[in-house]
Length: 247
Image 1 (cartoon, rainbow, N blue to C red):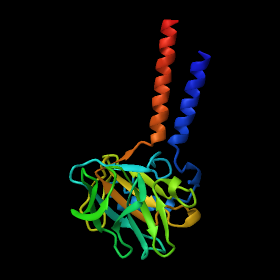
Image 2: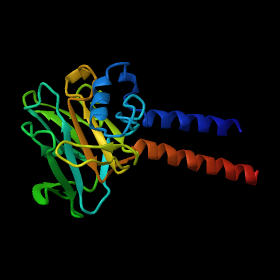
Image 3: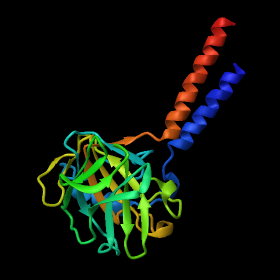
Image 4: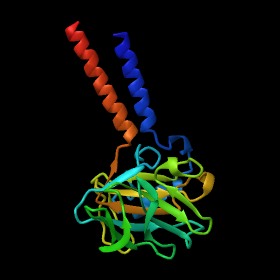
């Protein structure tokens, strides 16, 4: 029983570490501008988003996959950064982060859309045209890059130069009605996510509203460490369960 208890504690602690996000950076007041962005696109009768930017961010948002055969649509909501004209947004191959595909340029404006597709042979398509870049598979991350520095901020904070989390992600709840620039209002569904980026090395003001994008027909992929720990925990529980029955 003592060994089982220790194993369970180790697994639970490991899962907490593996699924932790940027909770340490979310100081009161820093995300108020991002909350304002979500409230601003929400057209519910109450007027404000039901999503709380301080508590409802995903606990894992490093790796993603396309969840629809037609591809994933990204829509720029707003770009408030001082580096707006030089920032670019896109996706990178999780198995080789040097492989990047741009979706938005610095000159693009709110309401701009791009359709991302990944063929079964790894070919990456944007707006149904082959980009000349091949990914290892249907696993990618999002990035924001400043071409003047140049510095790239990845959805996987382990790849960032400062080791900080530069992206927060929020999932729709099939409840809020939102209106994106230039588009008709619609339900913010559970297959749609809003991504907020911080574009200053060292975290800047941690407001995560330097570029805000909605992506649809995608799903986050659980971190390998989480899956590994979960598998080890289940295997361990099964082992000790068999010992107890056989003992």
